[in-house]
Image 1: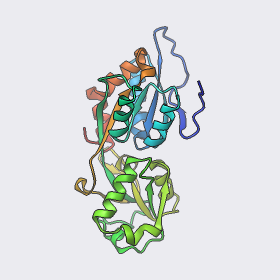
Image 2: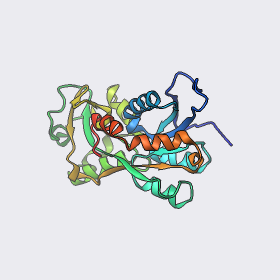
Image 3: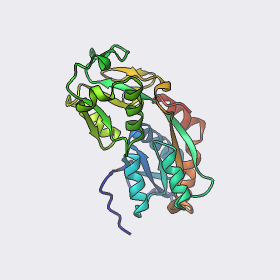
Image 4: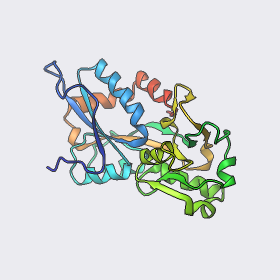
Length: 252
């Protein structure tokens, strides 16, 4: 099986591949880019509470889907939407009955400049910026939500020539963080922790301006007989995991 993963960043979240405990296993998890920070926190807690280890790859959900279809050895998928896990399930690549919603995401308009946004869409509507960052809507559900917001605000045509698209929500965030775009749409979890904005300025987009970002998890066929995969799925449904997920601005 081809084991190289070209379109996602493979990150080992532990200090080593193997536990000192004989029964310890590792689980390979494909994770939507918007969920990077929460997953890192969840993995650390899961590894402390169990004898298992998490090996995670982050990327746009569409890219992760392509990797799974082409044989990537992932055992669990944490998507940024509900449609991709459902599609994999229907294609026989998921374990029947394992799919569930682990988080509902929030979209935010963000600028690295603390004075650029005033908690409203005023700067977006003023259209005085040179670049507006967003994720590719074909690969990233948060990018699709951003497109829906611009349509609802009747700003798509007026701003289209200023769009800079990242292949994932992580890349869209990088465009803004580095100043290549004055503002843009990112996941709230990328700029929010423990009830407050971690940097810059923002407008939290009202949920009614876009389709709900329901993020579903799926146990993949590769992980069907892996006790670490089953344990991680169970952990995601726990009260401790829920508290971590909520801390990053997600709803359950």
